[in-house]
Image (cartoon, rainbow, N blue to C red; front, top):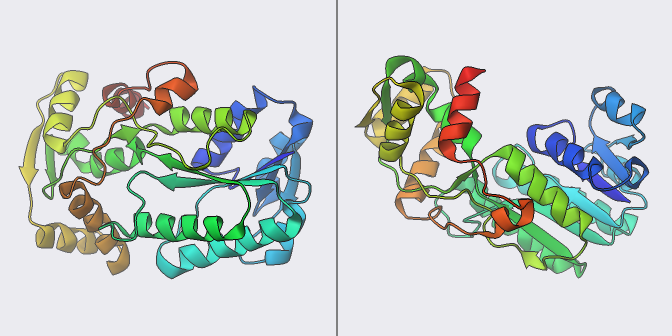
Length: 286
């Protein structure tokens, strides 16, 4: 039995779909906050159980019988994030899970400039301390995050963002397929995987060129100060912690935390990962 948390989310849902192409539905289970959102999975033979990171007992029940558990990282930051992960990991131990896989991120480190990467490093420490077999799937930075930063530029033609550095972006579909491949071939990685990245690391200067080629429209790249970006984020309604978090991505990129390009993702999915330009074209067409 393979159990997936967060199975109605962006990455978890895609991973379940790819997993169902590899293993019978009766070997797959999901732990979701709202089982109604996973009714279609239940209809296909997937075991659906309610599980909340704020309710340890529900997680123990949801994880029952799991040879492998895919713990999809929470959309939280700081202590709130790590506490939720600790609750899930403790529940996995209590439920007798055989192996825990966790969706970490390239650049996970205690001294990262990006809060999420520090949270991932702490969670990896928790996994290490269980004594269970574990795998940290170190995903490349989601291309979807870059596209969010480009949303205003899509209309203005000007990519006005803080100074950055090259980032090895990767798409959700490719990462979900790779994660399903790891789950279907149990124990392929011990501890952290190599970074699962797209084919190249790009800064926003290069992204501007790619956007121009993809759309036939000119795109410029304007560097704004960190302070100006922070003020703009607040003015657009972002809470201060979110504005800080967004800014820290650029600080980490400037320090080269996301520059590594590795062939492991391509090896897992059996083809070159989708390049940034193709993902941008698809997203903007939609």
